[in-house]
Image (cartoon, rainbow, N blue to C red; front, side):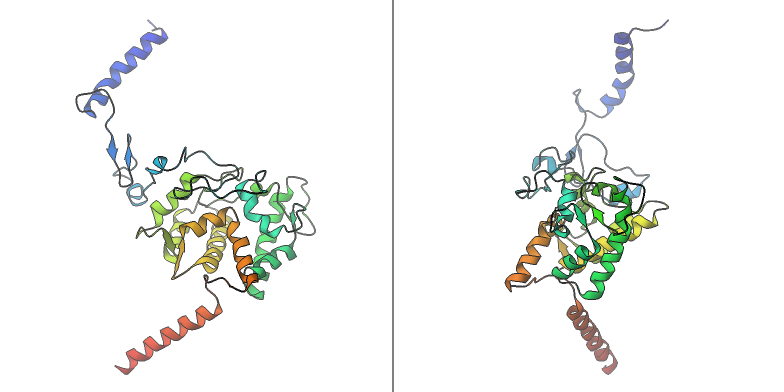
Length: 296
């Protein structure tokens, strides 16, 4: 004999009631579990998957940020910047589009290889690195964005701004969703999972662990893109070996690029990053340490 929907629902509740009662303390509400990040009403890790315990989610940011799992179309927000920066003149662009607008100076919606080269030079990268970035970015991202208009490759290797979401690759952080919007939960998870010392910043080793942890199977294109992107980010933004959270947030919406350009042009200079001088200093320090060992 079949049951009507109300009877089925009643039967289901009677079957699940003992399980729920075993998780409560004298009342019908589910037990609130205490995770390392905050209070939730369900498990965020399990014993048979140690990685779920090692990589902790940011479970408490909803107290600071409204609907953190809902992607923002044009604002890069965080727990410390819940409203994000004012997107003046960029309200009609997604956060991913805003990220690349620095290289589209004439506003024609296309980033030519020489636009990429010039932009990297203005950020302080040397000639060789800027040429390499031009080859990787325009060589790798031109055709995916070109597909929005034609199956034929673009002879100029232009990267198109409007369909830039088509250049989103695998093995990434998920901070950009598939349409180029910004997902605050994924941004906060980057630090709850990988900022091992809870400093509000990420070292190169922590960034590398994150890249490795995000790798998907059979995705060499995504692996390489992630290494290039976060390697470049570290070279541009590191201070005392770490990339701070706010600088990284501004990288996602591109505001940090305009800030660096302005500081360099004003004569103040950009006091972060890792360049040839830092490499020479590092080599000198290592040589001094080895010399000291040999003299003992």
